[in-house]
Image 1 (cartoon, rainbow, N blue to C red):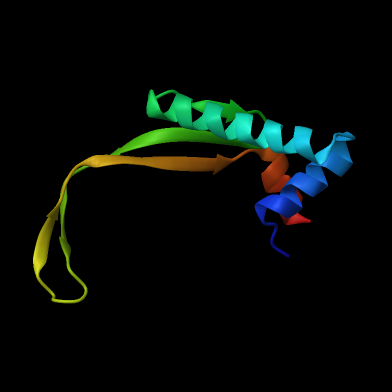
Image 2 (cartoon, one colour):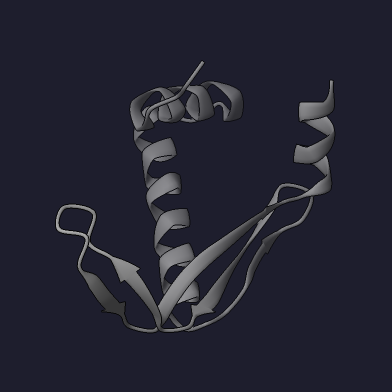
Length: 93
């Protein structure tokens, strides 16, 4: 089963006893906090669930899949997401 945003909002609203509008606002707020924090290089930990961390990627060589031409990929950033203990235990059952 896969949840899209609308289904996630409905599930959170039901679980927390919120309106769908309030659940949507909570998800939007979480998204904003994650984006703002990670863009500043800060790590975000939700104990037991997961943690988010900005990582640096070194410049590297790649290949254009269409032409086979070698290209330079500039250095940049990525996001590392690690599962917390509660999430890891939940998928073991």
